[in-house]
Every structure is written in C-alpha cells, then in structure tokens.
Length: 261
Image 1 (cartoon, rainbow, N blue to C red):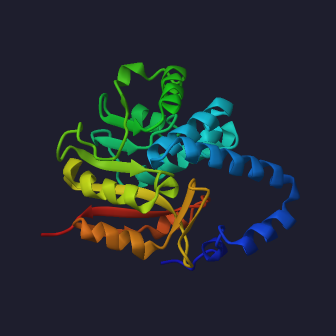
Image 2: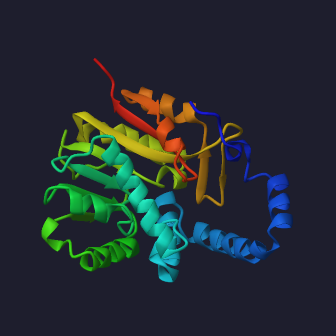
C-alpha cells in the first residue's frame, strides 16, 4: 500500500477537528450548521438509514443533481465520471462486459459506461427517485436511449430482482462512504449471487487509519481491514487498489472477487 495521505489520520467527528476546521474556514460555519439542522429533522422523520439518506438526496438534488452526487461544479462532475471510466478501461473493461452500478446517481460515470458497453449491458440502481429522474435527463442529453440501459429504484442492497452470476463488473462509487456497516454487510451478503464467477466488484470508501467514525450519518470513515475482513466473511478475496490512490480523488478503493475454492 502506498504511503497514507494526511487525510486518513483525521477524525472529522471529534470536537477538536470541528473547532480547528471552523477556525480555519469561518465562511463554512453557516453551511455546516444548516446541515446539522437538516440532519436532526431528517433523522426524526426517517428511522431507517435508507429512508434518511433518500431524504438527504431529495434535498441535495433539488438544489443541484451534480452536487447531490458530490460534484460541486459541472466541470468536476465530468472529470470524476471520466476518471472512473478511464480506471475501469485501464483494468480491462470491454464492450461485452455486463456492468451493475450500485448508486448510479445521475450517471456521472454511468453515461460513459452506457455509451461504451454493448446495448443492454448497463444496469444502474439507486435509492433516490429524484436522482434517477436526473439520470433519465442525462440519458436524453447524451442521446443514449438506443443503448437500452436499465435504471431501477431500490429500497435495499439485497439485489433479489437481479439475475444470478450475471454481472462481470459491479461498481459502487461514493456509496459505502455514505453507508453504515450494516448496509455494507447486507451488500456483501447478496452481491456474490449476482457477480459472475470471474467478475469483480470495485467500491470506494472514505478511509481512516484512526478511529472509525461518521459525520452526521452522511459520511462514514472505515479502516481498510474492517472492510476486507467483512468481505472475507462473505467468501470474497479483497485487494486494496493502490493505483486508484494515485488519482486526484479523496476516497480509496477496494476490489473484491470470489475467493478461490
């Protein structure tokens, strides 16, 4: 593994970090307090994490679909989508691959996958109906209707409606960074059924080398070994992707595959 960047040492939930950040960024205090207020209201109204985060996405998407998936500008949205696509292309993505994108959002990377893959070979799922409506607009804007992509709304990550051993590539970008460990465990428990025998599942996560923590139940920070051990309990081999770490993105990436029998 490459030398860890300074960000993985931080505990963003600690009072010390919050006070230091507020002192260094006074212009962001108002926005943070607004997030805190929203967090309290949404947690009272939505007991499950999926319902809570769906409400978060509804709120964010109303302001900007690009910002709702973590891209503050259209330019950054395009660059991050290109980065994800180029990475998988470098790792052998072919037009005949069958791709499942978990948390497809408004197709930041998905429209590039759809354009590249054979017709019907892309399946995107998301918990947010608002962001899926934005995804439909992306399809129209990019003139990709003839590629027959599948877009589905889900309430969980049990993936029961998808075919077994079908997807050669499963991709989840900025999903587990917003997920408590029970949601990740649910995904690991079921994704193996839909993953082809020689397929792989790439996911990003917010990495910490200190105490695992979350910020407002929106951003979750995990140690690498927590996720690799959890994957192993579900019959996967897991590998930290060092070459992704070299790219200009704040998250880390793990690839899991079916373990050798």
